[in-house]
Length: 293
Image (tube, rainbow, N blue to C red):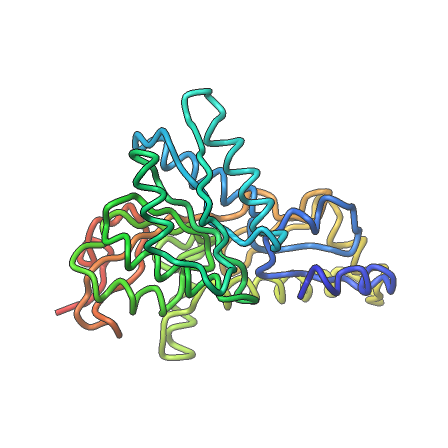
């Protein structure tokens, strides 16, 4: 949606702050009106590649939608980072296209098995095709045999529901821009909990940050205007504290030093499906402070 509309905003000098679009396509061509409060697909790719390499994984394969700009940019960035020290290797399987209606998770796993000890990296698109369902089907079929690293799109209740049916899910990690349990701004998730009676999710937190940035830019102008908004948000000294931490934009509109978190799934009886996403630094729900008994 953002890729399809950003040039309309650009032609009319109207600022667009995206809380969720990660594709590098939005910043490859300079658009002075574009900003984002999430990280980029390149940032997510680097985080996942570093984690897998530090975990001793020397070979990986990426399954994604080649028709999605976000998936394509993520895959390129992941391969560069994973192979950076010349000892990491990425392999390609025939059944790599998650967007195909006829995608077969078991066929993909059989092909991966033949490549040896290979980590699986999943990059489904933003639910414009059936790729998320296919990615989740692969997680279920894998049954904790291969390590799986996924992008933010997998941070969904549907993933939790699928994983709750498995005996083991220790080899699954997901990259997200923010998680309430490791928020730099400790008050924000507490205030959200009090206001809505539930845990604030990443999408809402980043949308809140986009709104806070717009409000701050308006306050800094005597007579707010479209041109004034763009110039204010682009100032080197423009800075505001949001729900996920400090918000400041670089020259291409991407957030400087964006927050990032790797999460895994732990058992927690009181959660909806008996499981929950928590940062990987917490090995159990109890260590994360969740009340599960």
